[in-house]
Each structure stands twice: as C-alpha cells, then as structure tokens.
Image 1 (tube, one colour):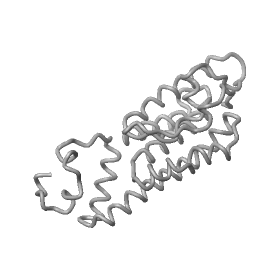
Image 2 (cartoon, helix red, strand yellow):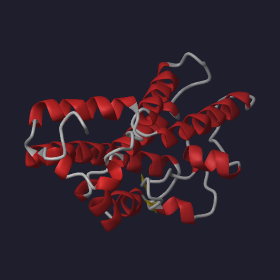
Image 3 (cartoon, rainbow, N blue to C red):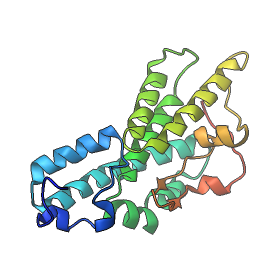
Length: 208
C-alpha cells in the first residue's frame, strides 16, 4: 500500500484493517486478480464488474456440477440445483459480494464429478483431471484441498471392491463428503456456508 500512497483511490477504497495484511488467497486467484488489475487500472467500477464476472463464471461451474452429482447420489437434481445454486445466500454472498469461493467451489465440484467417473487405474485421465481441478480450487482458496483426500478415499475404496465395479456405498463422513452426499455449495472465509440438500439426508448410494 505504501507504494500507492494513502491518497490513491484504490487504497482509500480498502478498510484500514485490511491495508497491512497479506492476501490469504492462493496463487491462482492472485494471478486472476493481477489480470483484473491490469485491465481495469484505477477504474474501481470496471474492476468490480470484472471480479463479478469471475464470480458468475464460478456460479456457472457450480450449476453444471450440482445436478450431475445429485443424479450420481440418486437425489432430486432440480431440488439440489435450487438449494445449492439458486438460493439467496449463494447469489448475494458469492455473486453480489464477489467472493472467490464461487471459483473455488466450481473447480472443486467439477473436479469431484470428473474424478468420480474414473475407472480402477490410478493413471485414469479422469481421476488425474479431477485431482488437477481440485488442486486448482485449492490454489484459489486452500480449504478446497480437503476434497482431494475425499476423492482419493472414494476411488481407493471402489478399486478395492472385488469383481466388476459396483455402485459405491456411503461409508461415513469421508465418503459422504467425497460425493455420496453432494459437497457443500458455498463456504465463506467468515464461516458462512450454504449446503446442498444432501447434507440433511440419510446416506445414499452413489453411482461410480
């Protein structure tokens, strides 16, 4: 902030409590933020619209992934979509508030969906792609990295089952978080969250 000076319009728009604190975000989001700054410059309004466009892009990814995860869990895809993407908390917090959890969740949910399509091979491109997407989500915000462990547990459990692939059975919280229950749809750094309706249901069988 010292490089800009206290009279810079960008510095004046930041509350004083945040001016001397390092960014808590991952390198991917910082890279995107640098691109937004390069385009918008000192135009705060243009920067706001650019960040909101990123939030909408994340919301589109969430909308793509949720119905597929819901069908995999034998849940009502329409209800999951309404509660997980179209509820006011998601729209006001992630989109209006321009929070980067929108991108984090989109990459995480898409990664889980793609990874759960993998076969028994550890080199299955779908498993690797899912892992890369979840790692990308953690490069936006670190908590998404937990989903990588849940995906690995679910894949290893399916691989250990004898005979032809069978529908994965839920096995407690870890398997539930990996896709036997649809993952949370929004998490804020302040602790607010909106979960998919599956979090209030009993364990369900999920398709591999």
